[in-house]
Image (cartoon, rainbow, N blue to C red; front, side, top):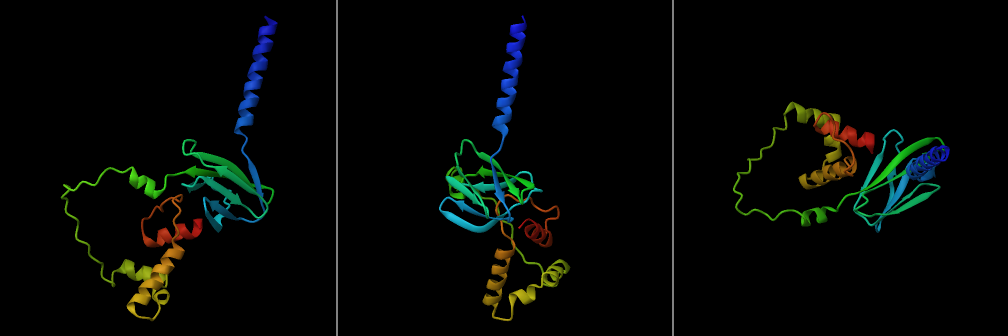
Length: 197
């Protein structure tokens, strides 16, 4: 009877140790918060900011291989869509642990290819689109707080449009992993983009 209890105890201990070993995540080190990411064939320099306060900080990809390069280390994963998630830790300055996750997401083209065929019989009316007056209080506030007139510049209409377009592109980056702001307006959206890089 003692042998059965001893065997059971040893078996349970082994199972616990095995499960702990399986949950241990790979660790890479960094002294700088900025990370370069090789996403398939694309090398994105300075693309990622290490954020220990976000748990986990998720990087979405449709690539077959992803490598994170810190200033002193790197880690690579061959991405299997069936696995879906790859977790690791970035240890910042030897003390702050940033749990990071690479998550597979099909490419936009891949999603479109799986979509249903277009319904040519759909005859719903498209609502008429109208612009608000440039004197609308919300638009005046946005124009003043963001200094859009100086961003647009003094050129012709096309050059002002292009200046604003480039400003929006560089200010409001979208990687698919940030949450929408509570308030759904331009100022709140820009604040989230600046805060979360």
